[in-house]
Length: 187
Image (tube, rainbow, N blue to C red; front, side):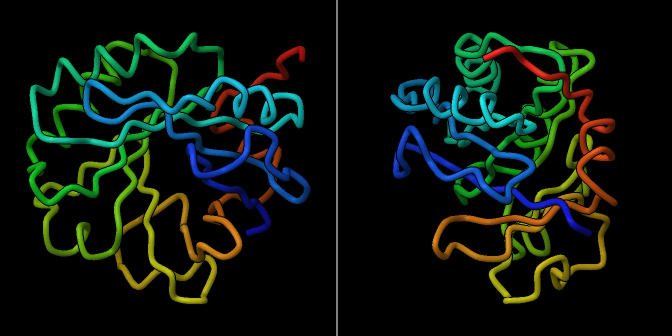
């Protein structure tokens, strides 16, 4: 596995370092009231560097469809964009997670969806093993590409130093591009 990438949110700069990255996952929304004020500039940084881009929504308790609407209303999708649910709030049940992923899949045909969660959520809160088109598992175990789970996964977030960094289970950058449907976006 040689595909690496980072996770950025409002905690990072609009012009974060992209050298050595093949992809970036950017936080866009949380619940129905928060939008990352830097996400558009962060997307521009990713696209200028030719990175595969993914956008995520941090789940909060509340109506699923309202959060799907809120998230999708912020993004002007282009071919190859990946859509991700960040499932970290213990008050958000497994059924909510599944519903969000399915609604996003139905409303954005042709786009890949991922579930992001930590190892504890995957092993102890998940009851269906549904992760859309793939699982992005977080476990800071100093073993890139070796999360301590037996389930299939596509991305492993293995460290947060100096920034949240993940490895993708793809042979190379071309395989990641083919899987996501990524096309080069003019700057």
